[in-house]
Image 1 (tube, helix red, strand yellow):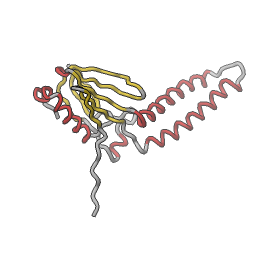
Image 2 (spheres, helix red, strand yellow):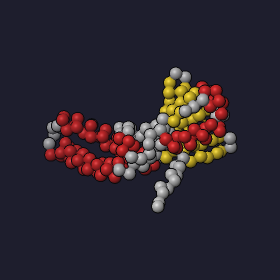
Image 3 (cartoon, helix red, strand yellow):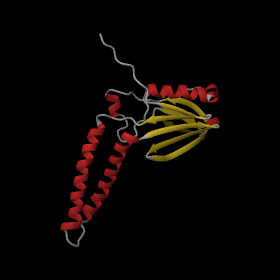
Length: 191
């Protein structure tokens, strides 16, 4: 009789002095990744053919429909290319230093960095999704980063993070944060 192997966490924790760093790698979606790569290759060939037709065989007149279509083509191409690069190389980083929680996305370089005062963070909670099965394939298909695994209240807004984390990994992150932000969890509790 064989049993299922234990899941291995993808969450990486690091310390630099008194600063805590948590890194969540992007989820590599094994069904979507090859499909998107093949789709992008075909989409690229189609776009190149249309560009050749737009600038080559029509002489001096430019077909406005093809020019408009190429704008949509470029948006689709960028979205799918970003999705592929995010799945392969994307990382979400959380840093906790001197009463400030920093949330950052990283794809080749840091971008979309936000900082929050720990004193104003309330209700850190798990909102993770299943890591396998049909539900994980159908959730948030439009967002290349996936669904967030965690959330907290900051003032009168909820902030989401942990986009690569499933439910079990979200609980692991909560346990790490409890050790380093005990005042948040004692005053306000968490789920």
